[in-house]
Image 1 (tube, rainbow, N blue to C red):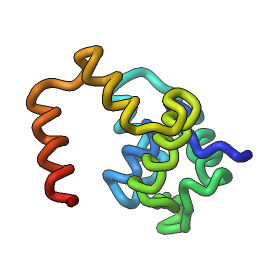
Image 2 (image 1 turned 45 degrees about the vertical axis):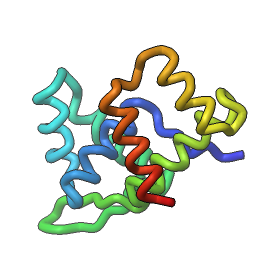
Image 3 (image 1 turned 180 degrees about the horizontal axis):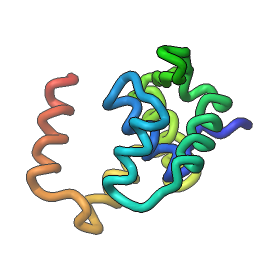
Length: 122
C-alpha cells in the first residue's frame, strides 16, 4: 500500500505552497530561511520529490519553475489523518477525541467549538 503521509519537512513545504498557491523554489526557500537555517538545494530536492510523489506540479515561467499544489490541502490532511487514526485508534475518530479530551489537549473552548460543529452538521 502506497502511503500518503508526508514527512515533516514535506508537509512544511506543502503548507507554504498551499498558502502561496504559486511558488518558486526561491519563494519556499526564503520563507523557510526566515524560520531556520536550510540549504537552497535541500528545498529544491524536497520540491522535486513532492512533484514526483504528485503533491506538486510545475510549469515554466520566466525561466523558473513555478510550483502549484497538485492535491487540495483538505484531501491531503484527510488522508494523513486516516493513516494515523486507522492504526493508532483502530479507525475510530471517537477514540482520538476521547484521548485528546482525557489528556487535556483540547481546551474547554475547543470542546465547545467541536460540539457546535457537530450540532450544525446534523
